[in-house]
Every structure is written in structure tokens, then in C-alpha cells.
Length: 514
Ligand code: ADP
Ligand code: ZN
Image (cartoon, rainbow, N blue to C red; front, top):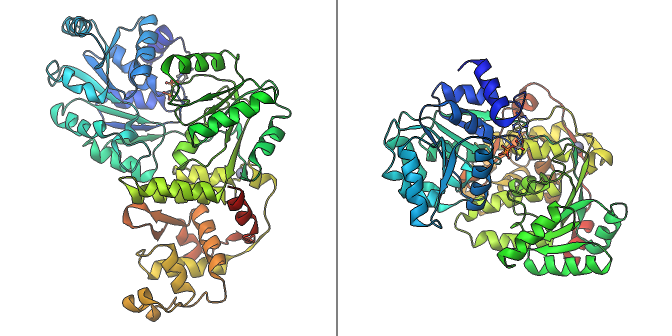
């Protein structure tokens, strides 16, 4: 497709002069007939990547989207811009559906939004060659590695078989490396081109504090934020309500929001928040999907989220206008234990526990938090960010290259077959069943770290994970494995700086106050 045509279409239908980073590349790749996977943060501009091609492609574009509520907004928006679009879902009247089928037959529709549960409606209408593009929004829902697995998505794998010549464009705002590969595998597009946008949101400050006397800390936080909009995320409905009443008593325009509140009231609360009638929403994670409010100035996590994807998505609702915004996460061991319980009742227990572990490591970080966060999504920051609590108030560091070498060579000798606890046992020369069974006492790295305590090793290994030298293999019992970066330490004399391990006291305190 000619560049000029792309720019003209962007201007004519969307009113924009320029493409955002990656948009043009993705659109070109769609026109080349490639399968593509797009990882772009919320607000990055994913929709145009399929909406613009849909306008220019000869046949219909199918958009699979999980949220019926959002579908309607999108379709209304497109129609208002002069792009003929429609949606099909199970809640529609039969007559409405028939009218849409009729329009499809008459080629009067360019984009058709369908929930994955409703794909059977489309089945009888579409044959190969009649669909120009299949866009799959929130594509991480197909993967049980992801944080929001939805069974209805699993059937999408057959689309490629059915429409082999139709390019697939899968899009998501959140997917770590394992999830990305799994998405492509599940969708039967192993060779899809991956487009990964930067996840860095420099305008969001990051801060983690122990979850002690949380309400006092929040009051303190709000002291100079009398008129700023913000969200406080809580784990339980009860907490959202208690917190909202406490804030109201203090004179704040606060409101609780959770899935137990009826639909009408929820819409009202959302609208009031968007129109600045309400200042603070105390919410469960039910709040926020599809909320387009650009001036949210802060997000607090009263409780720890269950994984970094969720955390990132939730803090990402602040500062969409690009202005400086603050985020604060309370870290408590009581929360960790609660989340562990939830995770261990879940179907994909191991994955969830491993993700929770990363969340915990982030909370306990001793090096730039943004580096860790972005590293989790596969993006490496060269410099520390300067806009997180660690950067602003750094712990004491020492040169720990030898410690790092010991740890890394131990993992190397163990052939990446053991989780963190076993690696520490080998380093410390423990004598237990696991060591004997595997003859680990024969390894050259056995007991090379016996002068360092278990707790210290644990903290150092977490640091090395956070620094990007070690990865946790979710798919293999959380075994530790070396990254490409580790070679620099083992073979190229790269120096490693570790933070002094703080004593556990603080954490215990946090646990008590829950
Ligand atoms: P996502 O789906 O990635 O969360 P959207 O597609 O909803 O993001 O886009 C987020 C916002 O950015 C929307 O208001 C959209 O109109 C706007 N936007 C998208 N592309 C551009 C562009 N090239 N120039 C200016 N604004 C854009
Ligand atoms: Zn930082």
C-alpha cells in the first residue's frame, strides 16, 4: 500500500496527521499478508493497526474482542467517523442479527466485531477469501500463561486452519515472553511477526512502601492532592467500601466500585469519575477496563496485585495525558499469603505462583524498579530511571561480582534444572536428600558459597534475577536459568553491583499489621 494512501486514510477517518511508533510498520506488514503479534501498552494505539487496513482492504475484517461493552463503543466511534462497522453478540435480538447478516452479504460492512463465544454466528457466513483480515484483541486471553485466560479464546486456533490465506493480527497490552510465544502457538501462527512497543511510561513515578498503617499513609499521600483524580485498588469488595467511607468522612469525594454493585450504579460512578464529580474511586480490579480518562493523577495499590501484568495495567491508567503522575504500592506479607492461597486453588497453579513470585520480587527490589518492570516485559533500560523510590533513595551497594559469578556458575553446572532453593542448597553445601539423590556434592560449585547465609543468598539471587542475569523458567517448575547477559559476567568480566541486604525486621512488621 502506498504511503500517501495510508496517511490520507489516517487523516480522513481518524483525523491524525502522523502515525504513532510502530503503527505504520504493523499496517504495512498486514498489507503484505503476514501474520502479526502486536504488544503495545494500553493507550498506545492498537486499534488503528486493524481499523485502518480494514477500511482499505477489499473484504470484511473480523475483530475478535472479549468485552461486549467496549465493542459497542468502538463500533459507535467507527460509524461516527464514517467507517461502516457492526458487532454481533449473544445478547442481540434475532432481527438485529439478521439485519447485520444482510449488510454483510451486501458488502456494506468493513469491520465486524464478534465475541469469541459468538464465533458460531459468523461461521456460516464467512468462507475463505471472504475475510481480508482477522484481528484478535486482548490476545493474551488465549494463553494460560497469561494473566487473564479465557476458555472461549482457545477455539480461536482453528481460524488459521479455516482461513489459511487470511492474515491474523493478534494484539495485546500485556504479555511476557513465555505468553507471547504461547499466543502464537495457540493461534497456529508460529511465524507471526512480533511488534513490541516500548512499555516505558516515564511520567509515572513508582513507589513501594510497607503495608503498615495504610490509611495514615494514604491520608499523608492525599494531603497535597485535594483536587486530583485517583484510583485505589483493593483486593476485596469489603475493603473498597470501608476505605471509601473513611475517605468520605475525611471530606473526600470518594466512591467504592466493584462487581457486586449493580450495573446502573456502576455506570454512574464511572461517569462521575470521568466528569470529575467524584475524585477518588476505591475499586477492585473490576474497575478500569476501557475507562478513557486522561487526567488520572495517581494510582494506589492498597493490596498487592497478583502479578506484574495486572499491576502494570492498573498503574498505566494514570497519566495517559503524559503529565507527571504518581503510583504507590503497599507491600505486605499478609497479602502475599492471601494471594498464594488464591493461586494454589487456580487451575494453572504453577504459573500463577511464579507470577506472584515476580510481583513479590518487584516489591522487594533493591535496584531501579522500572528496570525490573520493563525487564519483565522483555525491555532493557540502559540507565536507571530516576523516577522510582529506589532511584531517589538508593540502598548501599558493593561490588558483588564474585558472588554473582558463584551463583551463575552454580546454575550453569546445575544445567538450569533447579529452582532457587536448591541452587542455594548447592551453593551453601547443604547435605540433604536432594543433594545426595543428584550427587550434587560432586559439582565443582558445591559449597562455594557456604560463607553467605541462606537469607542473603536468596536476596542476592533475587537481585540477579532483577538485574537480568537469571531467568525463572515458568514452564519448568520455576527452575533458574541463565540469560544471554549472564555470559558477560561469566566470560567477559562484567562487574556486578549488589545492594546490601537489609534485615528482615521491616518485613515482619509489615506482616503483623497485615
Ligand atoms: P489501545 O487499543 O492500544 O489501548 P487505542 O487504539 O484505543 O489504544 O488508542 C488510544 C488513543 O490514542 C485513542 O484516543 C486513539 O484515538 C489515539 N491514537 C491512536 N493512534 C493515534 C495517532 N496516530 N495519532 C494520534 N492519536 C492516536
Ligand atoms: Zn528507577
